Length: 254
Image (tube, rainbow, N blue to C red; front, side):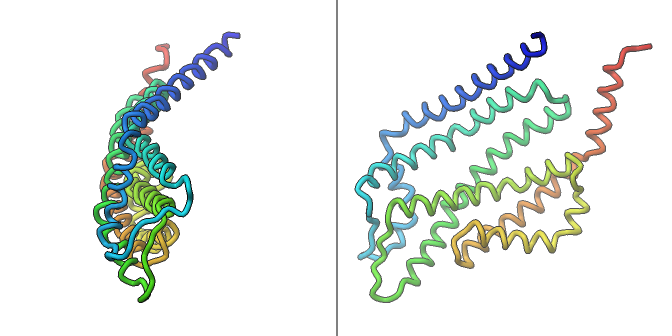
């Protein structure tokens, strides 16, 4: 019974953390839902700016004018609530971490959130104007560009997630080096393969055009180099030394 009690308390705490995280998303959503149509219009602005005068956005489904802005607002609420959601995750796992792990993980959580937001901003302000301008300019003569609002939403969300995750590369590099899976020197030696891999990932995560693929692959390579530089400040050996020091301090004196 004594062994089950800590497990139950941990499960209860996990449930409370999850409820708080979900509640934060719902709270932000309720605050934003009134402006759902305005939010969608802002999201559609990069495409609307490059459409020809005869072009427009359409809704091929009866419920699409309601559900597309609703879906976008819900996802935006999650994006906005990410810092609080990560804080709940941190509060749950922090008691089980070593002191040096806490010093590493807290900055990583904060920087990963910032990098994800930067990836979304880069997509909206840099990628969208270029990609949509290219797509509309190559439309065959006599073809009227009329994009479905649901298809457009799925397209932009795919790019948001792709670039948001791609901007997390420095965090992944740091964690791999910190865990001892690899070292900055090994990754540096494998740079040619990583360059090829970045363009392959860009091909898989973006639409089938060379512009968006390149605009994803190049930031990934730049962020990879940044991750290599940051990973040099923390190595597996340093973590092992601190673990040995903690274990020695925890041993009772003979």
